[in-house]
Image 1 (cartoon, rainbow, N blue to C red):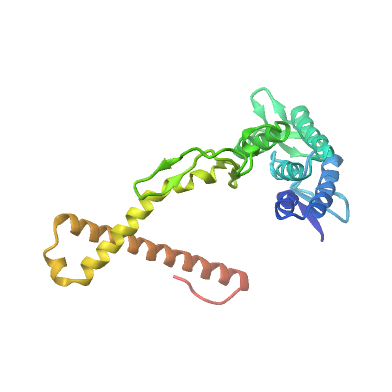
Image 2 (image 1 turned 90 degrees about the vertical axis):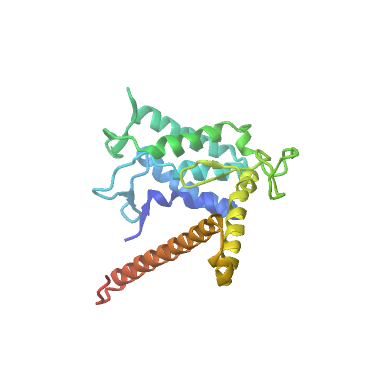
Amino acid sequence: MPVFQSLEAFWPGLLALTGDLDGARRHLTAYHEIWRQHGFLPELYSLTEEKAIKGREAYPLRPELIESILYVYRATRDPALIDMGVDILTSIEVAARTSCGFATVADVTKHTLEDRMESFFLAETTKYLYLLFDENNFMHQLPGERTLSEGSRLPSGLQCYPESGGYIFNTEAHPIDPGALDCCFAPQLDEVEQASKAKTLLSDPLQFKFSTIVNQRVILTYLVNITLVQLRKLIYFQLLIRCSVNMFNLNLVIP
């Protein structure tokens, strides 16, 4: 049965980021039509019956649709997308507001509420709405739109340029400044140097035998780190095997 899932509403935004603006507009318009039917997006919607699927009528104030509207609007500046944002803001304000916040819509067909507000509503939904209407917000600036300052020179010789323009949002809509990424390289370079030193000590038995306490600590740290890496790989491999067994119904016993 063809169904629409509210979590799929990120798709138009992704299309916009890849440059497929026609596809982004087309999908976004279809999703907005579902929104207008009830004032919210149900978790699952039957495309053949054109109604929310029984038992999945809830809308926990998800951000995916408004996220897509924001990205498509930034790419097209189509004022109709602002109207879509107003629709969403109005629905949430009128139907979901309570005296202590905003509640999950338990049933979009009846606008009944559940005593629950998900953290992603504050972290994502409200943030994307705010940025949609605040067109001059500094987070909209693209790389190259700001003059680079001298930056901070690290002991390694690298430079980092925080707030040099352009932000990336992670899956919870926390902004990441790409210009500041090099600011975190010093500890990594130090780890590489320590690992190289440990390998040198381990390759020379005589030097290892008479190494100082400091060098012994370097070696111990290196051995612990590679052990942890191998342990993580083993855990991930076991999880992968378990998922494969469950997916393909294989008759295997996994310890």
